[in-house]
Every structure is written in C-alpha cells, then in structure tokens.
Length: 334
Ligand code: VTB
Ligand code: MG
Ligand code: MG
Image 1 (cartoon, protein in one colour):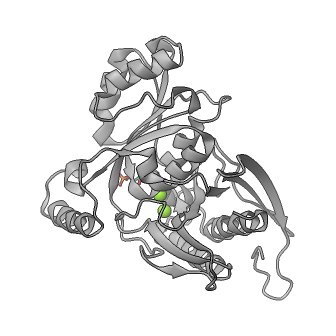
Image 2 (cartoon, rainbow, N blue to C red; image 1 turned 90 degrees about the horizontal axis):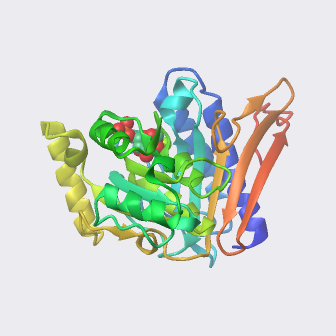
C-alpha cells in the first residue's frame, strides 16, 4: 500500500470514530452505528480504490451496515478487499463504557476471507508462539504448547476471553488448569491485538466472537507476526436451538455454502488473511487498552489511532487534532 493511502485509510476510521462519538452515552446502539457506517462509507467512497467489502458487521444484531459485497471507492486499478467494523463495541459506545474502537482492514483483492457475518471461534497468540497453535487440538493442549514455546509455566500464562455466558465452562476449566484469566465484557479485536505487543500481559486470546472482528483481527495479527486459528460457527451452535436461532443458522449455512466455506473447518491465518500486503487501521472511540478515545473541546476534537502496515512492517501511532469546519461546524477529517 502506498504511504499516502495508509493515511487516507486512517481517516476512514477517524471519521467513523468521531461520528460514533457524537452518540456516546445516548443509550442507542443503532444510532451510533448508523452514524459511523455513514461516515465510513463516505470516506471510503472518496478514496482512489476499487474496493469490495468482503465482511462487515451488522447482521448478527440487525445493525446498519456496510453490506458484504458492497463496492466502495472511486474506480481505480487498485483492487482491494476491505473488512470493516465501523463501531467495534456499539454497546460500549451507547453506554459510555471503555474499549470501543472503529476498525478496518484492507488487503489486495482476493486475500481476506469472504464470509457471512456470523460467529467465529478464535485462538490467537503473539509472534513468540507462532506455529504452535492447532484448533484441532483441545484448548488445554494448545495452552501447554504455547507455554512451552514461551518457556513459561502454565501458571504464568495469561489468557483473555470475552465474558459471555457461553464461555462460563471454558473460564472454569481455565482456572482449573491454573492459568491467569482476564475477562472483558466486549471488544475482542483489541484483546486479539494485545497478544502481539510484548509490553502487554496477555499471551493468548481465546473465545467465540464475531467473524468480521475475526477477519479484521487476522489482518493485524498477520502484520504483527502473530498467529491465529479460527472456526465459523452457526448461531444455533453458539446461542442454543430456539426457533429464531435455528432459522438464522440455516441462512448462515446456505450463505457459507454459496461462498465455498465448510462449516466447522479450521481456518488458519493464511485462510483468514493470505497476503502480507495488508493494512489495519483503528481509532479509539472510548478510552481502552489499545487506544485512547475521542476527546472533544469547544474548539477541537482529538483522536488516537494506530495504522499497522504488513508490507512496510510499521506501526504508526497517530494523534490527530481537528478543528471544525467553520460553516457546518462538523468535525470531518478530510
Ligand atoms: C462479538 C465480539 C465483539 O460483540 O461480536 C460480540 O467479537 C457479540 O457477542 O468484539 P454477543 O452476540 O454474544 O453479544 C463484540 O464484543 C463487540 O462488537
Ligand atoms: Mg460494530
Ligand atoms: Mg464488533
């Protein structure tokens, strides 16, 4: 990706974060999401790319979304796959909680997993444990292999996991094994990335979250040299067999078949993000472990972002102070 393009891609998550921030603490997830989606779409459509949204978030909770298969950008010969989550953490934004981000991954066309918006089981580690994970094996076996690779005792290993009722048995088993467990209410993209930063205490991220978040995380994990295995799961497998969940699962299964995906198959990092020419951009909406959130004053708005470039092997940590447009008084990074 060209350097100027990386800056433009960062503006996409900046704009979405600012738009979402305007709905911070208003108790309405969909209004926040809708504003961020609109801002993201507007910015993407102004870019010199021929982009395809390969996976987007929204179907699971019927949120407004950038549609899977939607074309974005001013037509150009730069064909790219884009995975988006305009607000990763609509609940956190609506209720003023920490760790909400706007996130996006961009890669050469045909290299990001094209999948429906459904659930995904994820096992993620940093560079020091690359190559030792295998989702065909039990979680316990994986943790033993990881602790060996990291030359740590199991009791010194820290695993992060979404604090959801579906994970209660896994969390209990993790305590039995003696590993340290960090639970978090929402936002597994941030938790996934933290495995790749040596100054962070998390060694492993495990659990069932969203597939779009999984593909976006995979792009960053690839660029950061970590490793990831995943498995697509139906709503019924994750949430139980009510009539509604069974119907959703049938649709997910049909969509997977149409996209050439086999349910239950273990997806490796290469299946999720095939190319090193991959870019990840995130902007904080609320203060979190990865990034600070948007901060507004009378005269300016400040955002914090990270852009990770797999090809150039760079991380840019960007603080942007924007003043409002004097006519519209809107904060739109251009
Ligand atoms: C997952 C996770 C996200 O929402 O999608 C989760 O990947 C939804 O899980 O990071 P439930 O449907 O069980 O609530 C997030 O935590 C936030 O978007
Ligand atoms: Mg979202
Ligand atoms: Mg999300």
